[in-house]
Length: 185
Image (cartoon, rainbow, N blue to C red; front, side, top):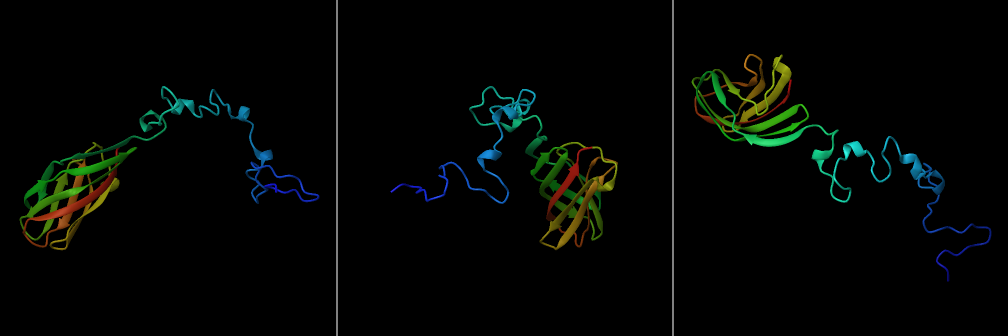
């Protein structure tokens, strides 16, 4: 018995053909001739050759060889801290960051030791330098779960760094975790 029996008044169906779909895709009549793929030196074997600059086309494409990708960087750094207002001391820990194009996101933790239960500010250096023109050029948050104390992080435009501002609710030394994002300007 044949695999695809032919009934009276029916055309034979070839194994590689797909029956019509509502979107008219995958029908043999809708296929593009490979000679139509060639545009400015690109063809079916080497699509976007200027963006795929590798020695041969048999290996894995490296992101570093694709010219139209944004800058991608990730790393760690230990920020330099500046006790701006109401701090007896502070301690920096290793933080991590990721840069995609001109956007940098940083996360980490610091220990802060407020002088009094009052408005407090800590300056945090950046892993990738930027020149801020407005406070909103950098944004983020910090929080201390031990004493339920949170703060906002904005740009310090005078010093081109992050400024962690919060209302200290006691004078105990506490760890605060933070995250902020900014655009390299």
